[in-house]
Length: 322
Ligand code: F6P
Image (cartoon, rainbow, N blue to C red; front, side, top):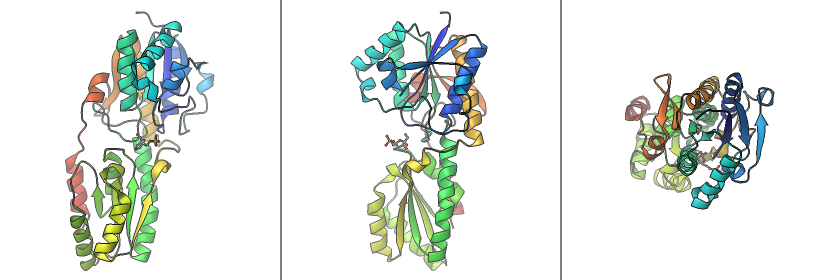
């Protein structure tokens, strides 16, 4: 099918670099004489037929900004058949020849359903701070979130050392520990708790007291939000060890902010490649990166396959945290 009009939307949780990806897709599309329209507020905007025509100038001055100028939403309705059928009708009515969805796993599942219902080619650009999509080494925004959390951890370390306290720092990642693992290693955390690796609270307390005996008077425990209840963990450690423990939840602080150089470059490469993929006839594809090369991955594979953590990284953290 000849390509003329492309639709683009950012969906689900925002991630730093989404704007750079939109800009790259738009500018590459324009250079290839394609028209491109931006749906607003993710799938909510697609279902409601809310869009704006995009061109080179409309995407000027956004490469360095976090968030997404197209806005985004967690559109519950797109999980239903009615939602998919409404979105498919809007795309058909506008004569959209290809859709680019910039988001995470939930967004890609909906994109697959939308492709099935409409036969319109869909390309997913992985943009989630969680980095939990199979088929791509990393996703837009992950590097920025890790650096943002790392900056916070470095500051907390000052207080932990000065007061000889233990800190539990909860980082994002929904059900996965990718952020916690990288931040934990980078911050030199004494303990990293992630959902992928089982642990006992008793074991955590023992490690803290052993460290104390060996002369380590402060500690940082990086805990992924999916690894358990961090408030309960804080109280239990206080009770069982008698240490002064403080809890910091980094929360949404990790989702915004200026994208790092790496997140921007990745977004530029993936945004531009997605247009080329559509022109090359890809129909249900995620634009991934593997070993530094941009690759076309089946979109369904990306959402149905479990992406394992790198256990050697976890073991490295254990070796270094002595
Ligand atoms: O998927 C990104 C993410 O930030 C997760 O790490 C977190 O669990 C979730 O989104 C929070 O979602 P919301 O912003 O909708 O509360």
